[in-house]
Image (cartoon, rainbow, N blue to C red; front, side):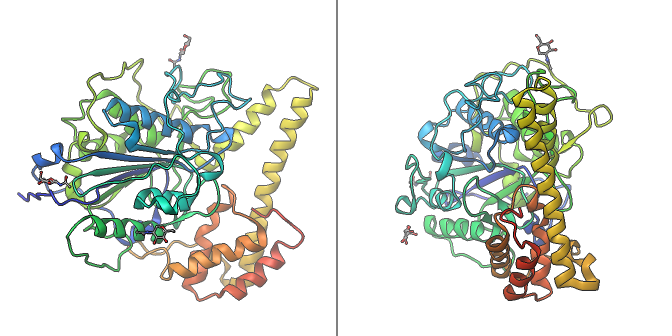
Length: 456
Ligand SMILES: *[C@@H]1O[C@H](CO)[C@@H](O)[C@H](O)[C@H]1NC(C)=O
Ligand SMILES: *[C@@H]1O[C@H](CO)[C@@H](O)[C@H](O)[C@H]1NC(C)=O
Ligand SMILES: *[C@@H]1O[C@H](CO)[C@@H](O)[C@H](O)[C@H]1NC(C)=O
């Protein structure tokens, strides 16, 4: 039995994400079943519990990501975390959106309670940027621009919990609502620096992207080969009330959130929750990465323990045979279709809804077209290799700087990648892996996106 005494722990970060983080695949999934480690009792009495909650999207069609984040806030608050230690990034355009049938209220399941109430508005609107996210994690106030000024000002005994809800895409941990993406290596670099700054431990540098010696445990909604799924969608089972044209949550997120609401967190470990979430999250392979020892910690170590378990208004088991799973990328299309259906015949609204839907479809076709052309231009007869997955165990890309530069090069010619466009991020990784240069991509993008401002 291995027992790790961790009174020196500098950073402990447990992360649930709504989509693939293929960058972690270089590390490989944790072998299953896990070796059983002993609990470290000291864990339960260490310092302050911190949390960062990030919704990476905006727009009413993405209702569910901000709903997941707000629900997470309620879980933490209920667990005894203080507002001063919970830092929220959300665009905040859902609760008061004209399309929201219950203005001022956000729910995360059909007939659920308001999860928006009390959520701190730390970084909203234009200041929900990657720069602020890094500054918040690092605890560097002078690097902040706008927002509440709250940062993770943690000490060596503290824990940090990070939850990200977004569509995700290959090679970026997430998009932020505004500005640059959070690129995986930048994120890891910030974490490493923090770990080093808060402890006396010598850092061992691994070539791997997510080192397993910086006390980080991560779970994700799916591996890089798959999509993850939205849930509580119109037409699903159970379905939101008919006035909602959006999905209320993501299957992976609501699985851990509802589990945390309903169970004694002083008795359930991260590993146990991982198993429960994995079983409930049909359609995608929930993964765990990082320091496996931490999986044996109780949930309460990170998200606190709740004296009052939430009332469970109904319990249900999702059935893949009864419910069509809606992928992250299709959820917005469903929303636009339903808005069109809902609008009265012959009304101005109907025309607007039709235009929005047409625009979205045209945009998607355009992006497909652009990448098709870029593939022809750069890969020629080997075009099929542009979107190929590398063998498992190999990182997505060998040269992360190249990846970052190529994404920027493309965006400088064709506009920012949209949610849909981000399904092609793998193409940039593969370009780097076969040695395509920035100049080559620039020429190809210029040609493919000619006369279009919005290629995303
Ligand atoms: C939500 O409430 C309505 C009205 O009370 C009820 O008909 C419906 O079955 C409820 N939905 C769920 C999923 O519980
Ligand atoms: C904090 O951010 C500022 C501005 O970006 C930077 O100059 C400084 O080096 C940072 N401090 C630390 C300790 O990283
Ligand atoms: C961390 O915890 C240890 C052991 O409980 C204690 O001796 C130490 O003072 C704590 N450090 C801080 C900075 O709180």
